[in-house]
Length: 283
Image (cartoon, rainbow, N blue to C red; front, side, top):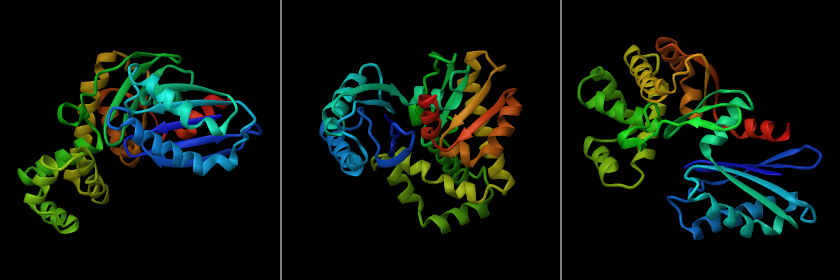
């Protein structure tokens, strides 16, 4: 069995042998919305090179791929690319492709109902009944939405630093540590590609200085906005709210404060879903 969790930056692959032994592999992220078929083929060839020796090609293989951008419209193309390019790993192959949100729900909730959220570079959420996703508030991306995400925290950090909502000594510290100037920041946000990744790359500064009361308050408030804009529509504050993603994991204490303030019970926070997905599929 081969399980994949693919985000914007990287894909985690778990190869599960018949004995139950698990081997992990890593490649560049796969997203059919932003990458061509040739881009995806190249990444899959890298995977084959990594794990060929660990596979018994005489045996059939199930592949469960969970990925960003794997909408119902894009999933068939991804399934075809996986089937074609991984064919040397197994005599027969059965491929199923799901969204990264379904991956988060299965990894975090298993077969129990709950609210599953992604909070990394971007953010997303869903109401999950233990089998299927019942509701999903559109995340709208980092310009219109993605509240609580690394991109949103980075955007808010810059806004609050340069508009005087955070203490001047923090602005000076940020400029010193980052080496950025105001013109460089504007160029990276408005003229360079992948502005969301640049904004998210600023969150380590927040993490290093989270003991600053103003920064901690900023993060908690941003997370409260996430709860209000994304989870209130589900009307299920009785369910635990679980998170997967580097931002949620790094700022769990602030996430717990925001959840309590908004009337929710914080459940698990995991840096990545691959371990939970392995547990889900081997049960």
